[in-house]
Length: 132
Length: 289
View 1 (cartoon, each protein chain N blue to C red):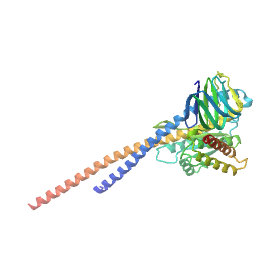
View 2 (cartoon, one colour):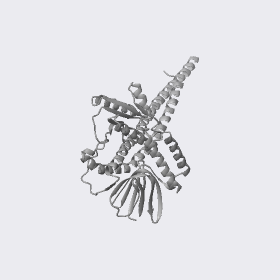
View 3 (cartoon, rainbow over the protein chains, first blue to last red):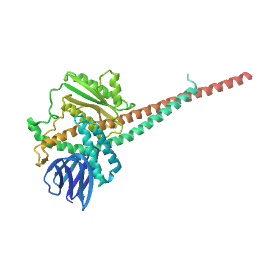
View 4 (cartoon, rainbow over the protein chains, first blue to last red):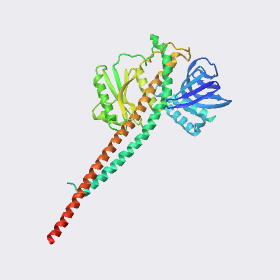
């Protein structure tokens, strides 16, 4: 247990634990972190963040954000973060279909297209993590 | 001279007013506590975001050619003020202070811009500005009810997009800053362009940035803006409850004073009535002798 992991969102501090390994969805692909990782900062895609603690995996649904690591301290600045066990699968599925419906009505140059497509990806990520 | 029954009715009426103000005060106190907690809970994220931003922006600012447009002040023609009030009244000077502060800003900064537009968050701002015949570009409705970060983010995003599109050159927020439960200060804070963070002495660690420093900065800046809107909304909410609590506290006190005064008057009137009756009886008995 040499890593510390902190997940914070604008609304609250979600998690603060010691762990052995962190895996996260970077914008340039997934990556893992163990101790003595080089100082590093990246943007995150909506997706699954996993940390391993004593051989057990814990999953979180992350709605995009940033991750930085330095001195074996991992800090995740997430737009949203939810523990996989807390996600209601039915609600997540409904949120995804709603978001998809809304997106379908938009053209690609609509001012809120980026926002809505981000919402779809976020919803998909939540469902993906919950269904695990 | 009001009759005994009139006074009694007034006492009952003031008593029920006191009950209402007392209940409102207690509700406000409970909500205030929750709003304060919400402010505290945003601190870790806000601090970490600031730190990250300072580090990432440090070199970008030194290198002037690559300054991100959100950080670069430009000739300011069109400004917009977002006026944040509450949806409900009965909160002392909470809302009128904001409107006054907004009007001061409009007179003071009138020459700095070619045009100043207004937007509102909260029903009171909408009604007040309308009543003063000021033109409002946009009302953000239903923000306070079930306030979430997502709503703040949506507002921030709209302004970031309008700023980048050149529709607006400066955006200010006017809201009540939360000092303490009894003190709120109306402030005007510049949202856009972003004040460049004070550059720190050379970073101690050399970070590896992915995808790149510039790309990260472009992701960090809109979140910084969203965070400022979020904080303004939370501070305003906490201030509102604080202001309402003090207003209801003094209303309750006033009601109590009034009840005391009325009760005194009532007792005096009753005493006078009893004395009068007695005199009449005595007088009547005397006459029979």
